[in-house]
Image (cartoon, rainbow over all chains, first blue to last red; front, side, top):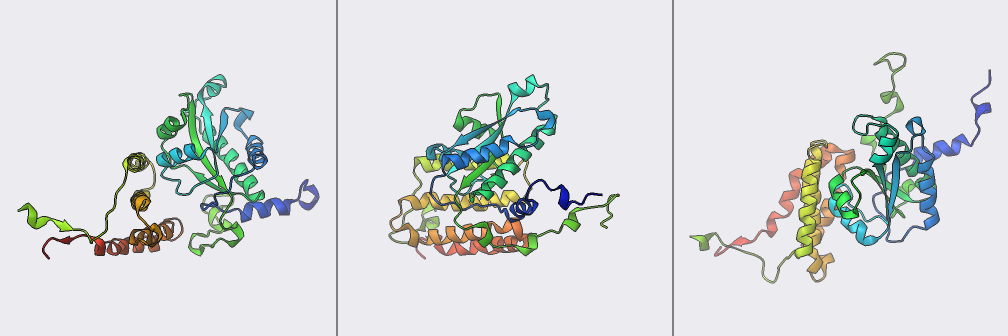
Length: 192
Length: 113
């Protein structure tokens, strides 16, 4: 029987380290982000798993400070000043073309989550701070960005250079959970 | 008598929020009202606390030497504590119990007192 070690196609330690050391960054410097870094983050989102390999989402990148200011007004969940925002939107026309029922199919939001997590990890790997935000008014965001009716903004990713590196950020013991607390084996409630 | 209920602000101190600030804050309130219908109930208190910080920030825009204004101290204090909701709810609730006490000393005193 092959060992797990022998089957590893990539450096698992580095991937796992990236996953474990990622933190939500809410305080950003005023420095802009390089275009190639934003592109790398978008590529990571593009490579996310999607249900049925459907591509009914679109990413909208906003870097204009004036637009970011307007978005902040309709997004109470944003209380920092990011250098860039990536909106993950569902395109209703594309969804219709794929026979996806946007309001009933949970995969629509799962796909948003997989893209978002890939982007969070890519940002972390590039040393860029990232913060997911879902506390925003969809109508408000659509209004300030002039989105067409077919575009539904489902997720906001704030990006910027972090004031503090994640490794220097405070750990809050009260909020820590162990994997054992999250996992049952073979039957519901069985922890070992 | 109306006059007996008038209150006096501390001498030399005035605070204003301009037109853009008013619209910005109204937008925040309206968006928060929408979010409160679908988010955890404790977020409602968070939005109010964050709103207080945002209003303080708007009022500080036209204040000379805003960094040393008492309202800036209050805003910094709120911003420092509001995140407690995410990792230490008891400490967050304890902060809510004390934060109002930090502003009452700045209420205008009743006229004639």
